[in-house]
Amino acid sequence: MIIAVDGPVAAGKGTLAKRIAAKYGYTYLDTGALYRAVGLFMLRHKQDPSDHALAAAAARNVHEISLDDPDLRKEETGNAASVVAVNNDVRAALLDYQRSVAKHRDGAVLDGRDIGTVVCPNADVKLFVTASSEERAHRRLAELVAKGETTSYEAVLKDLEERDARDRSRTSAPLAKADDAHLLDTTKLDIEAALEAACRIIDASKG
Ligand code: CDP
Image 1 (cartoon, rainbow, N blue to C red):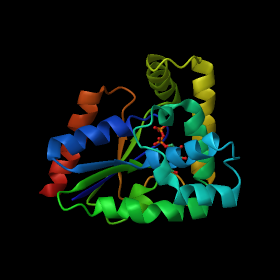
Image 2 (cartoon, rainbow, N blue to C red):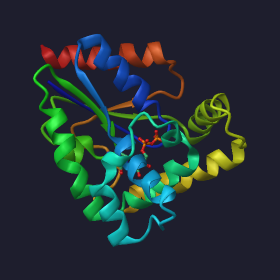
Image 3 (tube, protein in one colour):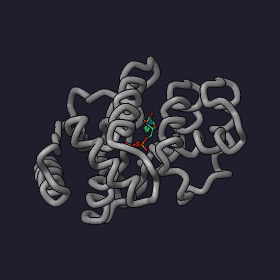
């Protein structure tokens, strides 16, 4: 069983995908963390994330960054991630690993931008999770403040809209809802309600 969870910045994909994986006993992969690790690698080596060859080399050395590194969650790292994510060679370098996790025998939940469209086009269930930009900015601001980052609602909203625009307009695996994905708008749903809605879709697909 493969479950693909895609959507824009801070739509709640990660929390939802983790809860789905825990409920059904499936393995979970946050594919955004891989792109964040490439971005962080470049920031730490003082390299420009838009440099094609350097970003491709960073993607091949990404194991240098632990996926538990707290700096991965910084706003600056998210922005660098979306810059390296336009790079075809970066995406190609990360593809095999994502597909190998998807094949986990107990089932897998992957969250990202292109899981239902490119990484796992044959996923059993596809969810496209979204929420209004304002609600997403409030959620991301609360997360960043809780981690001690100093920022403002306006700065978070601006970053989020820029990042979404970059993710949607790139030519390589842009952020998009797969035709067969279920749209889940969580603007007015808390995590429990979103999980309930997702489980209804998953259970229905199991027949
Ligand atoms: O958690 P948040 O929604 O801020 O983003 P993320 O899932 O951690 O992803 C960070 C960035 O990585 C995104 O803005 C995308 O540019 C890129 N990404 C991607 O291109 N493809 C994926 N499958 C996952 C993330």
